[in-house]
Image 1: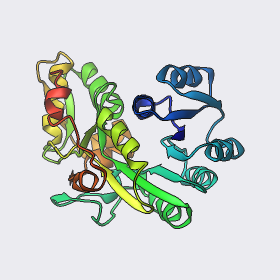
Image 2: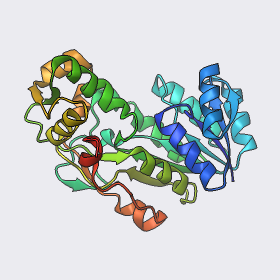
Image 3: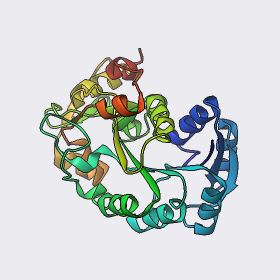
Length: 279
């Protein structure tokens, strides 16, 4: 299948291109800079120069393809929706959301959980509603918090600040659960989602939902801090991290049962704490 992909030079994008190529797909990937072009080319895709605001480029890429995977992080809901409209008129269009939109889950939940998003991701609902209503063959993947490889958000907001203070922080008691997914498992889910029926929605999670303090302890071992962690208040977290602190403070537990059942997708990383600890 010919696939057009945005966000290909990013953390998720490079893994997804590699998985698409490995499974026999031909990939064109949006690249807004020389550095992005080099990254997507190295991953196995043909680069298409442009950014999310270049709607003609997006429409052209989608028209040449049989399917689209939209991974790029938009700067606003308006930009994300405009991009989705430019690309969602033909074959399968796989749009990226996130599990944070559900807020606290109050136990183990699936895709049917009600939405209660923190402000940082509240913009996603009107975008996803429009995608499901207007795209010809919409599929939405809502990833959990990623780990593996660069651990982008975990590294930026917890590991690097923790190295400077000598202990990895967690918020409050750290008893809240994080719905984690390994980047390689998520890449496989995006490829599997190309075969999903129109209107399908999947949470992209590994099914193991450790407590935030457990994650902090694992990261502290991997960072050479002998497992040292420290609790910070939500107010401290907001001051240090900004609005995303409220998302990290969510208590979320999700099951990947729907993707297993409908797509035959099986997470291959059953022990995120061990991976995060460097095992």
